[in-house]
Length: 165
Ligand SMILES: [Fe+2]
Ligand SMILES: [Fe+2]
Image (tube, rainbow, N blue to C red; front, side, top):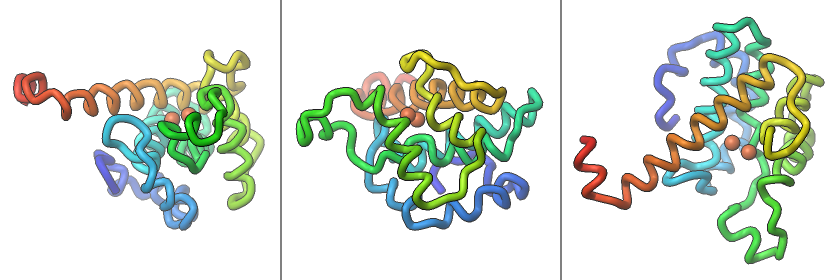
């Protein structure tokens, strides 16, 4: 399951996300790179588990964070080539709606999960989420994205990489 640092051992996390993690549409995100060398699927698992852990610490709805985290980037295309292929250049702004529409086709979402997916790009998209779980996923997404991007650059810069290993 990628670099999940312990989520396999967390039975409550595994139980409340099982239907999503085992669904073919979720697995299909493994064909798209999100940042660096991390696939969309692995990125979503990392964001989901970090958002879940934040909620366990600060008292948000950890089930909603875990489930919406897995689905927050279910846009199902390669965003690196999407603008060139379709002429649509606003991926950063539009993909939360696309992800929500796709997620709604395959899973029963509660209102909070829908709000988390739709608002996860705040503040780039101007309206913030409305719950702690929503802010946990906003934060987890930023942290994981930055980490994956830096790691991706490291893999292409042997000098930098060996300095740190
Ligand atoms: Fe996103
Ligand atoms: Fe993301």
